[in-house]
Image (cartoon, rainbow, N blue to C red):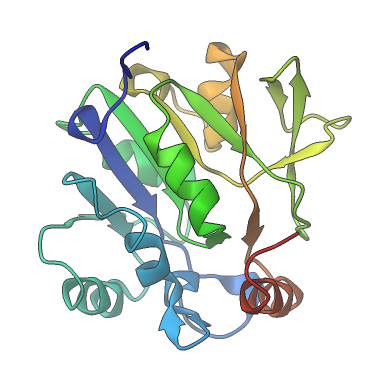
Length: 218
């Protein structure tokens, strides 16, 4: 059996949740939205217990996020994006890469994942990009051919990209405001089916909670 190249020991996890969540319309960062009695950011963190280099990019309501996270685990590094009103996820991600390990697992703070699917993705020992069939009001579509993601933000994509990626640190360079543009030069990359739901609008939130209550089954 081939030994995994990517392991928790050589991976830095970055969760980007600096944004204001304006489209959700609740006056709070999406990382703190309640999902069946628990903040979304904690549901993210509970799936990352095997990783010891976890960094969370904060901005809007930073102290609230920090307090919630510190109540769960004390070893998380917080990175501040003070320009959260005018910058995007790619800018937040770049701020968190100083001293990062060889591989980076990048996550958005506004997504719910099927726990078993995510566990398999986290254990995958090669570079990969999750793709989902779950609906979203603002999808980034992925084109998948022969088990590989060959294009992101593609008008003819039949899969949705949930904003998650695991790749070498060097993939996350450049100046683009979008993560999918950052990693485009590295494509094609293994596609990893992962059942998930994004929370961007009130309709997304209602659908994601209903999906979660039913066991995250599509």
